[in-house]
Structures are given as structure tokens and as C-alpha cells.
Length: 153
View (spheres, rainbow, N blue to C red):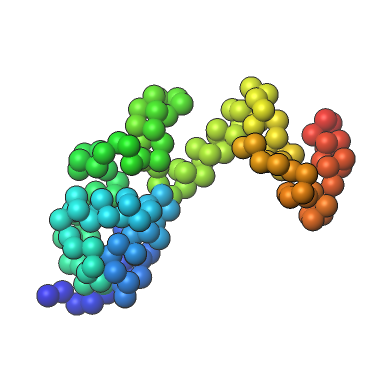
């Protein structure tokens, strides 16, 4: 058996070796509990095993599964970017790609002047929540009047 590693590196993320594999994989941005479970099954590695007990070959196999989910038979309904706006394909984004895609979506909606796009820069809710008694703007440093004048300039 290989020597225990306290930190392993998968998908450019340092994972704690003392934790179970299914818990350690969730530290990768874009991998939740269900996706971590699917990754363990696709890589044929028990999810209860400690992450530090993995051999180099098993680490490489998990890394390959994480980076190429569709190739290893993970269903597309588990992906976090289904029917991508630009390409139209099913994708699963990881790490910094998630933040970049979210920012691009917000910019696209702002350019379209959609309801959500208008409310994003004002720091207002965009999903229909009530704002009369919650989400008060006076909690922060900027008031609504100052923010509107900044946007109109």
C-alpha cells in the first residue's frame, strides 16, 4: 500500500487527505455531494476510503473522471451548465470557469436590459422575492439614490 498523503491535488485543488474521498472531492468548486458520489462510482473507488490512501494511479483516474465527466458515463442531467448559451451543448464547469460563465451571463442580461439584467447592478433581488421588509438597502454603505445616479452617468 502506498504511503499516506496529507494533501492530494486533483483538478488544481488541494484536498485534505484525512477526509473521506466523497467529502474531500466536494472541496473542488463545481463538485457537490451527488457529483462526488458519481465520480467515485465512475472511477470504481470506494467513497468511504480516505483521500490520502489513494495511489498515484487512482488519483490520476479520479482527476481524469473529474475533468471528462461525459466520457465516463455520468448523465448529462447532473451537469451544472446544461444547454450552454453560446455552444448549445451540455457541459459541467469547474473552478474559475463557473465564476466566468456567471459573470458573462449577468453582462449579457444587462446588455439586453432584461428584468434581471437591470436589477443586478442595483443589488436588488432578481428572482421575485419581496423587498418591502427584507433586503433593505440601508444596511450597507451605499443608498439606492447614490447607486442610481452612478449608473445613469
